[in-house]
Image (cartoon, rainbow over all chains, first blue to last red; front, side, top):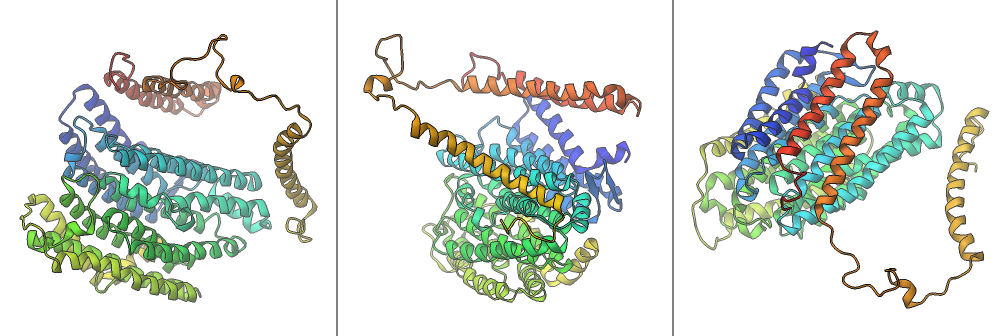
Length: 474
Length: 137
């Protein structure tokens, strides 16, 4: 592991650029918008620096850190997420207090934490990475402290997040107490050679509770709607994609290495199935009566967590590949939807309702079509990306024998159509109060085009993408 | 008990599990015991209105009972803890420094980087005037 490799890894580069930007804006007090543009640039540079090391393989620092294809894929995912979040923040700058450039620099550190999580191979590093992500989210959620709703969201997220973290640490303590190690390979080796005792299973369950909070799976989802509604919209999109993905990448790592043994699987598969079942049912049914779009997307995010857990419950390579593909579909759709929400809510900090979408097609066609594609992709209609994501997840779960789960999931997905299509109906068939054209900046237009076309193209060419993901996993 | 003790496990494993069960039982017993025994045999004090008000040298208290603190206090406390924790890391490093040096000069750079991180935090803190008591907020 040479110094160049360390410096070029996204974790290190993003941290250094965040430090530099913090110092620069504290001393030189530049225009806060220029800080945001530099943050965008540092995501791009970090992506370029990643290129020479894509083919690297190895486990470093006494088994603490792993660099493999999957880690690289997730790091790229998190870099894209961070880039889009910063772009969304720049779009919604009217809501950010002037002279608060930390709003742009803090996500750099969050993304660095997520990139670290993509290559954990030790429970201690797992905890550190997860805390980097969670603690910076506590600040980001409550950032608009002028609004009581943001403060409420921040406090709720802090209290429940702290509880979840304590569960995670307790679980790690149990695992360490029984196996004598926190390193994933060591734990896996212990499970192969020794019978799995009750405290070890308790440790597994506690770890699942802590990660279930990040993934907003159902018994641990209570914070989701309120926090999604109260946080400023770019941060909501970050929570929906980045934070959820951080939870799932850790679940993928943990369930596929230290807890992969048969004796563990017979304990965690029923739990994951239960969480998935509850998530799809509650998420889809509770989203139907919601009128606030951010709250609705919050419940929808719970249901998507359920579909993703379905992929995990399959406990095979197809399931894991499905989870990764699903996440890319989710990223494209969620960011398109939230970009439209941000452009519409410019003057309404409390978030907009479905009624505000009335007649959007007459105001701006591109916005309406982008939102429509996002909604249809989230609902899982062919031929968009979301459909193939759902299909893959269902196939994987069906093959591993979770028939009931797949049937319930398909029914809930059908129920979910109702609220996604409700938004589309409002945009195309409802009459607006006033027809006032919305003017978009060229960059935003390009981004909306890319997201819409991406969700169609990657849907049509899903097979090569899924094959690529499968190759990465094996 | 049969949930915890299965015949297939070796004896040492069983003892381990038993210790674990005992730890749980002891924790519950101690907590419940302290409250329970105190409630059972402890003398109940007389409860009067005078006893419930805060003690202020014999005079009745005036004004709000829980005054609002300036958020500055918390800010300073937080910053203090941050820079206090730093010492703990330095201790661990200083103790093993001799051993680490035999593996190369890397150990020095690691702590210098850590110091740099703290330095950035410190400069940021000064520049944002977090320690300036006259500043609002």
